[in-house]
Amino acid sequence: MLDRAARTLFDAINGAGYTLVLLFRTCFWTHASWRKRGEITYQLATCAFGGFPVAMIVAVFSGMVLALQGGISLKTWGQEELIGFVVPASMVREMGPVMTGFILAGLIGSTMAAEVGTMAVSEEIEALEVMSINPVYFLVMPRIVALALVAPLLTIYVDLVGILGGAFVGERLLGLSYNAYFHNAREALDLKDIYSGLAKSAVFGVTIATVGCSQGLRARGGAEGVGRATMRTVVVCFVFILIFDYILTWMFY
Image (cartoon, rainbow, N blue to C red):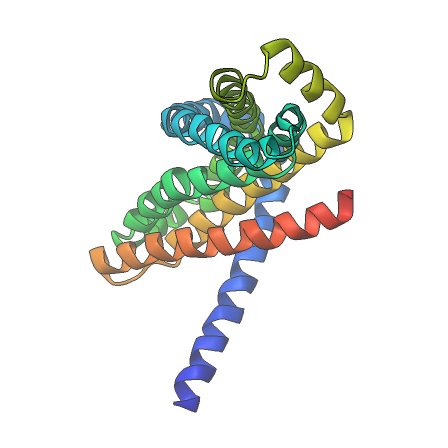
């Protein structure tokens, strides 16, 4: 039992070290991003169009549920107009970046792990190295750069859709006019809320892509190994999104 626990701990530490080294190596290769602009553009399109439909559904209903639950409680004291403060602040500061991170982890991070993992188990990574092509430059860097750019853009979209969903519920069910809602939203938000949320989403994007590529590169054992890498990517990304969310919130506020 102790041997198994020690082996699990060693594998976790080894995996964390491998992932950090992979991130540092990727940072080194970002100077060559322009030469891989075609692949980066392809990854941008894949990440964006893959995440937008799900993000719209999650965002609009999250904003509506937040407005409805908060409005029911606030209406008891006749303060339902405060929904215009609660929903926009919650979406921009926390819910928007975190939900975007979860969506990208489930959709894009797992896809990256499966793609790279399939290449690893079929020995395509070794073939690249034989041809003197660096896998980090060829495979990892475009994916990390693309997701680092897409995550803030998708977060803006989620924030806007969630705020509009809250406005719809406020007007239809709580009797709060659109003018009052958006006036309170402008009062609730400042520049710090916006850039802190976007900074969080960029960090989440880099984390998701790095973990996905790391798990894929270390996949072994055929299709079963690719499946394990995909599963671990989603779980690890969810955990680190929450950890980094707390750390960044503490740093900004």
